[in-house]
Image 1 (spheres, one colour):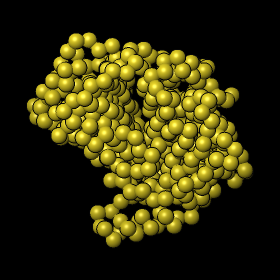
Image 2: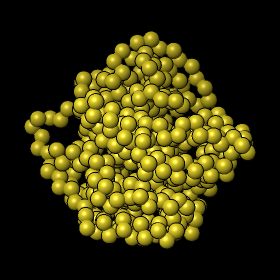
Image 3: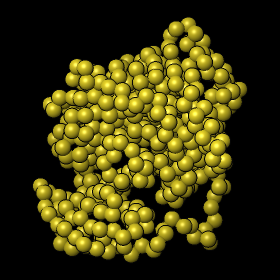
Image 4: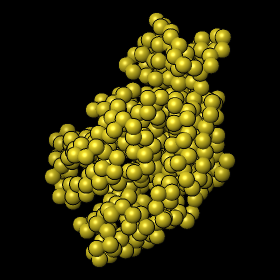
Length: 443
C-alpha cells in the first residue's frame, strides 16, 4: 500500500492504494458502525455522465445541524456557508412546508428529524483503486490505527452467523388494494377536472415491534439492485438503507444537473425478451408523457437560479438498465452564477419533480390528502456539500427506513398518475418496485 500525505486547512489528507476494493468497502462500512453518525454513498461502479466518486464514507460528527421544517433552508444555508467544509446529511420531503403553505399531518411511525447534516471528522473518498482519507485535527497515530483496524476485519463481515436466529418479519400494508384503487380513482378525478396533470402517489409497507440488522439489511438490498446511488445512513437510532437509482441534483462548478426518473419496466432472464421489454418502455406513450411532464417541471425549477437561456435537456427519455428494472431517465442541465448559493439551488427545486407532480404545489396538496403516511425521508434526498460549494444528492426511493428505538421498519413505493393511468397497472408497478425491499426483509 503506497501512501502520499499532505495537509490542507484542518484536514490531514492521505492517499492509499487498495488491492481489493470491494472487500475493503465491506470492511470499512462494518468498521464505521462504532460511530453514531455514518453516511455511506456507493455508485456500485455504475458508470454514467457526471460521476465524481465511486464511493464515499463520512463518519463521526465534528459539528451538526438538526431541525424541523421551520426556516430549515435558511438554517442549512447558514450552516453550509459558515462551516465551509464537507457536510453530509438529508432533507426530508416534508421540508416542502418551509417553502409553501403546506402541511404534513399523516401518520409517522419513523419520526426522523426533518433535516440533519453533519461535518465529519473522518472522510474516505473512493475512486478506482485509490482511497483518499481526510482526517480533521488528526492526533498521533490515529489514522494508522484506524487503517490497521479496518484491515483486520475478516473477508466478508456481512455473512450472518449460522447460529443466529433471524426474526420472522411480516410486512403489513398501510393501504390495502381496494382502498388503493379508490384513491387512484380520486386522483384521476382531479386530473380530469384539470386540477393537476400528474401526481406521484405513494403507499407505505411496514412492520412494527421488530429488530433488524441494518448493515446486513443494506448489504442484501444493495447486492440485489447494485444501483448508482446506494446509501447507508446511521444517525443515532435512525437508519436508512437505500438502493436508489435516481439522482436528484448535482452541482459541479457552475453547472447544475438533474436526472429525473419516470418510467419503469421489469427485467427478464431471457435476453431477447429483456430487449423487447426495454424497447416497449422506450416506445410507451404513457411513460414518455409522464417523463416529459416532469422534464418541463424540472426546467422551470432550474430556471429560478439559472443564467437566462442556459437550461438544456441533454437526454430525453433515455433508457437505462439496472439489475432489477429498466428505467426511463432524462438529463437536464443549467448554468448558474458563481455567487449563487448552493442551498438556494436546492431550495428552488425542492421537492424533486419526479416525486411530486404538476403543477407542483397543487399536486403536493392533493397527495397529502390522499396518502396515509407522512413521507419523511422517503422521497426526500441524501447527499453532501463539498468545501468548494459543489454538491450531489440522490432521490430516496427503493429504500428501507428503520427506527431502532421504536422497532419500526418501513418502506414506501409510488408511481406517477396521469390521465392515461390504469389503477390495476399502477398497483402492479408498485409491487414490482417493492419486490426487492420485501425480499430483503422477509427472507
